[in-house]
Length: 314
Image (tube, rainbow, N blue to C red; front, side, top):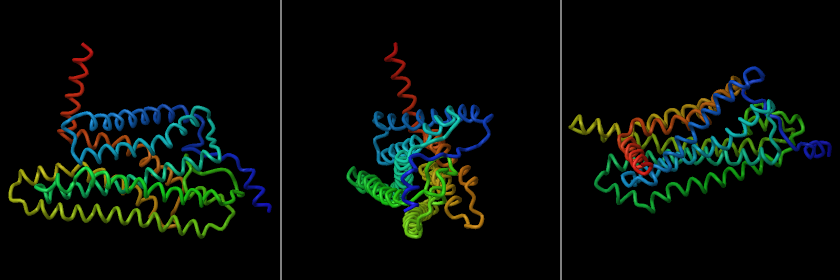
């Protein structure tokens, strides 16, 4: 009964933020404001560009558009709220706001895992079966490969969020993070967490292993095909078509593995904060650069877009 009464009193949570130093709040606000603006401009620009340019109406850019959408999604779930906290000097989020933030954050992160897998499969088909590429990667198949991750991630996020927020938070209302995440929330509950911990571990393991397995198998077939090519020019061209995706995958999966596969004895919320800043606010900024600066078609589309804009302004 006492736990229930304490739970009912929790109407808001206090986030510890990235740092407790008041003198760094202003500097961090400037840095992360510029960072978030770069995320919005880069990802929104990529979405618009791959939508309007006729040369980018291929499956590869279809998946790239959805990758930009989920990058923009989870950074927006976290970034603006964090910036408001830096301005006010206090990081407070309502009980319902915390649940909503956790739901959307988890949904977009899980979606990104499987969209990266779909992109790896797309590159496998393009390099290993180029003659049948447009037949295999039809519009219906492309939509199926992005709609399934969205539906699945929504279901998983809903289950985890509902289960987690049925717990009693009676130890404290202080979350040792700069956004609402599962592990910091579990650390302040006084309820039995064995069931929700099991659910999270099962889903997290399945999501990470299955999506990474698809990527690795696709890459294995791609590398075998490239090594069998007689022409060095052909090998270079093939490498260039999935080099950007390989870079994005290594950065994203590497950070997630670092966070979630740490030994429990060395697990630290401070370490998690640094890694979380990287994959929630840095990777969404880097992805548009990774997929555009190394891509001649995207650079060509940007040139055509600016040229057309200049003509219209005149």
